Length: 351
Image (cartoon, rainbow, N blue to C red; front, top):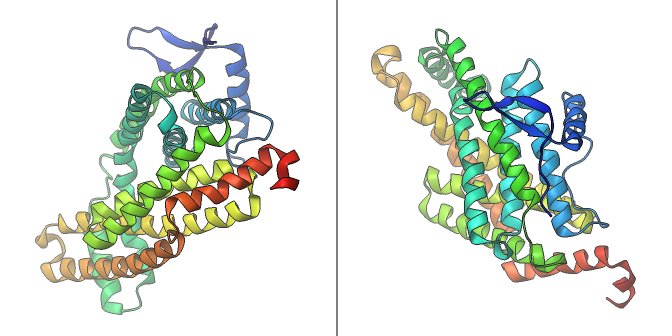
């Protein structure tokens, strides 16, 4: 049955151009208040399924909690808005991973619409993250370089790259405007998640999607290794992140096994993430004028980045081949047995 988020309370981030506000129910307002209070506190638990709820109810609860916390960060975030933006972007990735978990069994139109919405939200924020990550990456590499000449070249390149000083205020204004604008989309996504029809139960509802995500990540690994391009490795990273977030949802089914999986996926994702940051930094260095710090400096700085990227790629390939050695069917079948035992404990003795 549809539920409407209608009440007299309003969220300042959700006002329309005509001055009308998207309103929420008292229950939503109470949950949002809890989310506001939790800001700045360490996360007590990751989004996970519970044994006493259906798959659909679990996804509704999890998506609702994620969206409430994201809207709370937009409307009532702290002084570190960069961290608020980062957490909102993580919410988009978790929601897209959840949507992919039930992709094979839900309406194709629903998946396309909501995936497009969440992707649009994430894309609207990515430029603000990219504006600072390349400088931070070059700075870290300059501090950690063992060769004195490498440190000097990277430091000169860092000093020559734009610092966004004169436009920092405008950058903040654009960031705030973008975050306020996306809050309405977030709440609409919450309504659609709540009204989502999942015509399957238990592992039949999520197993095909989980297996498909593993298969896509595994195939994209082979593409990345074969092509060796920044785009291919970034596409691999996205699939790994989807599998990472989905595995977190399923962790209660087999805590020890899935916790180990999550740890391996996290190590792989971090390695791929650092490679992506270096790719962004390389693009930024390539755009530097030779007059700003000299051709030799730019060339050496790019060489340092490429050397580090090659190291990270070898590490990623090793981690990936270790994790994705199993075919998708066998990988999913093992977790399916754990899921069945967790959800139906009375069958454990006969399994």
